[in-house]
Amino acid sequence: MTTKDIQQALKDAGFDPGPIDGVRGRNTIKAIKQFQAANGLAVDGLLGPETSVVLFGNQARAPVEFQIPATVPWLEEAHMLLGIQERPGRGSNEAILDWAEDLELHSYNDDDIPWCGLFVAHCVGSQMTEEALPTNPLGARNWAKFGHEVSPRLGSVMVFWRGSPNGWKGHVGFYWAEDDEAYHILGGNQSNSVSITRLAKNRLLSARWPSTGLSDGGVVRTAAKNGRLLSTNEA
Image (cartoon, rainbow, N blue to C red; front, side, top):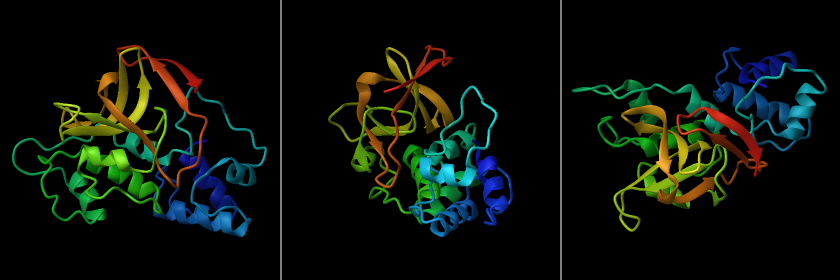
């Protein structure tokens, strides 16, 4: 189901998610928690299998080729931001600066400062309101201590080295798919934009999952090197 489906179902059940706009914002998260509390469910703001059954019952929903699972809302937020770019030259993209302001990272004031960690922090922090972010989330390698370690899977936070495996430089983004040689990473500050980029598998330091996230089956997606998705498998 899509976020719009969830919002409409919440509204029909008497819980106000705000506008039916497909954006999983604070009002939608609050409505999910209110619905869960009213129905004796775990109050986590996530649409896991138990909440989904109570909210949707046996309603039939049209199948689609692929949807980002509702259990990984941070990836849905990341996907919605594809195409966001730095402002070239003087000045900054206000959207990127707003992410830092929302996270109270007041020292971040210029999108020339690397923002891959900021992008991940925004996506996770805006959707997982109870999740602890790393100390100094702007540092890509600091995400190697985030949540808990998992095998690479759809939506996992992927931490890579840059320059040297033993150095301090790094990059962080979200698993989108993989081919034989590389992970396809949905991330920020990739060619100065939010994009999907191939990163060599031998550069991976760690794959992480939010501590407050729901456990999943470990969706692994196989893609061609040009990014065309070939299959989806359960790890």
